[in-house]
Length: 347
Ligand SMILES: *Cc1c(COP(=O)(O)O)cnc(C)c1O
Image (cartoon, rainbow, N blue to C red; front, side, top):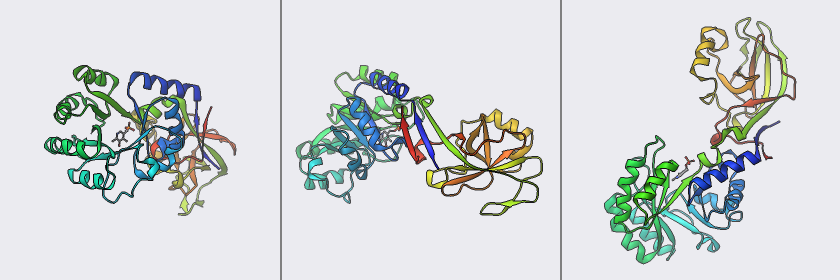
């Protein structure tokens, strides 16, 4: 009954190594569902990559990685006054992100000598201080806590170098010697290093590290049942009618549902615009308003018969398509960061 993630271990590990080599000072990011691979696995891999620091998204994620990765733990979500005090054994390992001047004082009072990075606001407009706030806060912070640099979180639109260079001047103004930065290409990082040789650049990387070589990853579901359908029949929770005659020959019941994060919208990048236009031109299920599912049989994406159930989905097999056997595996195109797998196997 499962939705399984298969990882080609040698290929995946080779990719991890090549990213680490191209990004000196790499800080792997392990957060959320662990990019589909699980936080524990990413923590162990980070130790294997011999990085000194691992970034997590939230304080709640610390327990899952702390025993599996021995180094420093950077928390990306900025500290706020309602964050529970750290377990004493984590005091020396956790690096807090401070994004508001007021939080610095509160944190310093609660954990004197805490390790912190100060976050500078960027065009993301998510969290962070203005340049003036940063310059005012940095000297105060240095007296009360251990400032380990400035954090800069940039958008994913690419071409972040001009903004990064502008913000580096603020880093210099705050007399910081390390900058923790996201979403820069290796070439952009090289330019930054060349421009600021006295500043240590720590690239934080999640997606392009763990999921950067999609060919090393595959996802499969199982065909749990196959039922022929004919005109006039109804099926499913919603007792829908069989679609127009000549469009679908069977119902396929497959593993994977809402509990796994299987959603109604198929992830983009599958068949592509041209493929979809071709389907619409031919008529068939797409033109009936039936939604494409992320399940693929013989290279062809299948349509949902009705919205996914909690742990299974009902699909329509187009007439003329090969009828799969119960127990057969189907490929599934998922968003890894939004999917919970029943098993993850690394070869
Ligand atoms: C999630 C996150 C990252 C990693 O982002 P990816 O796109 O997965 O590489 C880096 N920095 C911050 C602040 C983040 O929240």
